[in-house]
Image 1: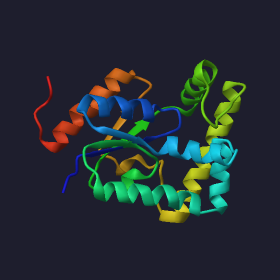
Image 2 (image 1 turned 90 degrees about the vertical axis):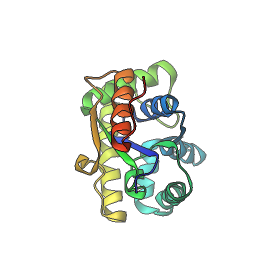
Image 3 (image 1 turned 90 degrees about the horizontal axis):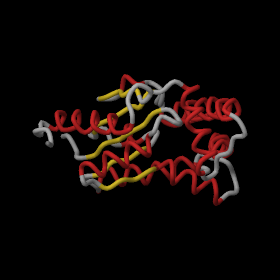
Length: 191
């Protein structure tokens, strides 16, 4: 049974949170970001986002706390959009979206955001430093989720829709997702 839930994942810097917020707004759905929750957990422990990822490799409870919440949300909620690395796994009846982006472009975007407004629990003094940290973070997450749940978060074959966020701007990405989601639900397109 298809649920009125959209799960959005992708590489760091691909625009998951901005896209999820835009899709939720466009559909009148609620939005939740497990990345924001993870950043808060890092800040509460005085860790960077990279450091909490490495800590989570040893302390499985960190991931279990987030994942228990995702499972609960998938069972109890409807009409929401979530950006999360693993929500697609915990909410198999959701419309699953993968945002694809070259890792160098992602690092450039993340660095620009850090310079412009800062980013909770994430720092970088150069694009190269952000790139290196991001590569380490992705590898840490791949290792953790493979060991914990036997899933590869970078395998985009598990998704209903893959969107390249390099060639599409935010407004286009949001429009592509909403149109594909409505088709998936067999709902006439919004005008």
